[in-house]
Length: 299
Image 1 (tube, rainbow, N blue to C red):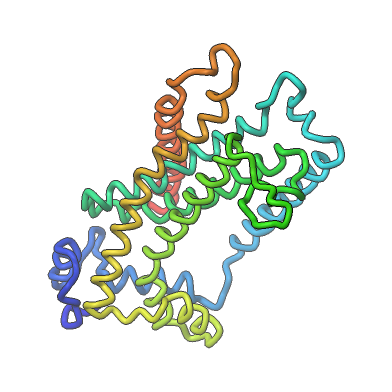
Image 2: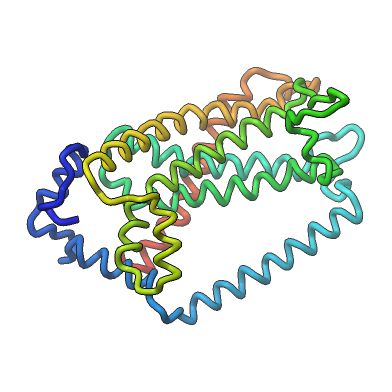
């Protein structure tokens, strides 16, 4: 954005960035050169060979996943270790792990935004994307844990003539409400943060189909003072919602275990214990992603 078109109702942080003329970033790049470089990667007509290689690997992994799910449907969830005395086995352990991984991405991004830390922009995008992928992976396991995934809609409070509602005393139902709420807020938080960048791609796109898609996704963004004001307000509200959700969702996930009448598990320490473990695991995953990226891209 040009300095002359800087909106009046934006944060002091953004004003400080816009006031730097020329806007020189470390390593000699300006904001314009960085935008041009990233826009060229996204809008370039020539797809690099590495993309096709990554797509092929992802496709093969998807085929392996489909075969394992098919084997699970044929043989039953007993292959996970579920049996009569064991209610929580390999599936719920993985569910808890994926949810824990997913918490740190939004938590890091939301807390750094609330604390007005400008360096969050170096990690917030892939941390938020990590959350979305982790929550998607986590949702697979409770679905198949029921043993009859084609009846998963029974977990939702759908109206029906027989007045059969879900069993709200079951932690599995609590998970559905908690995880779906968290996934929705995380997706909105991720998407709202992308709107100004999507509008930049819209303005630079040469392909009419790309331009049409970016126009829809940018939600009419023009960079006016009113747009910046409402954008920052919505972003802060979503960050404020995401932070307590991290604590509440994993506390509810821990109740899968603590409400069971099993000695050693039926304990009130589980919610804070699980939240602490989720934050540690999520931070570790962010580092696992961040450190190789910084090395490969020489950031």
